[in-house]
Length: 76
Image 1 (tube, helix red, strand yellow):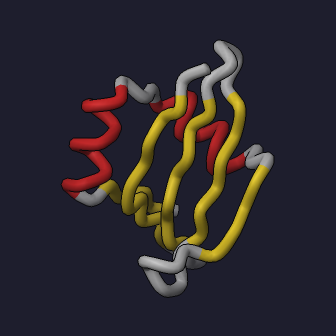
Image 2 (cartoon, rainbow, N blue to C red):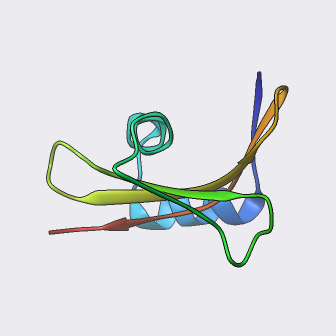
């Protein structure tokens, strides 16, 4: 599967200091999941991180592609 990051995702990841391991955890081990209201066909997934923060990832997934649209981090 190919993984692509939008320019917006990349900027938000850098701005919030979100690591690739945090993104992977949010997408593969979510505590919360819902459909995105702003990005039709995308999912919003959130997972608590080891440091107590919560990382949210918005992405659209097909059999061949995971398109990461945006992300943010909520610190405790």
